[in-house]
View 1 (cartoon, rainbow, N blue to C red):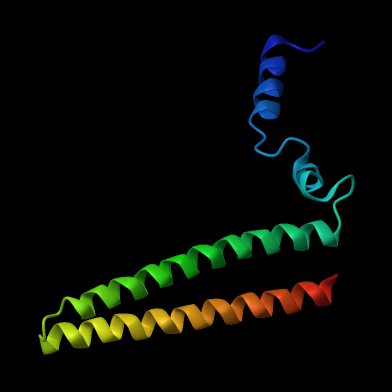
View 2: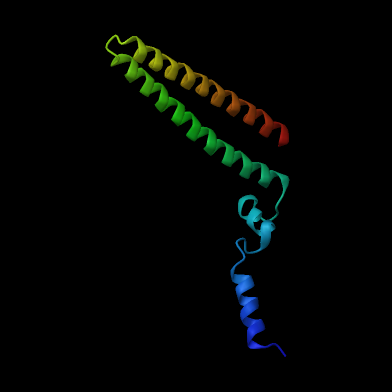
Length: 112
């Protein structure tokens, strides 16, 4: 006979499960009826695309920030140097994001 305490403990354990249905149930949400390599790849691809989008937007904002700093430096050599460095490093960041997106597309095509 199951006591009241055991019933409560069982409900607490079931309700505190962060992924009802386990990891397979979680993956099924993204890949249809079965969790497969395709669904894992698709989920990873989406996560990396979102991260790359945020990184690209941030790099573009920093480039614009450096551009405005350069324009409004009013001939101050120190401000010009700082603005140039901001623009340079943000441009390098944009190139890295573009390269990462290209590499991601190649890897996804190879896995599909």
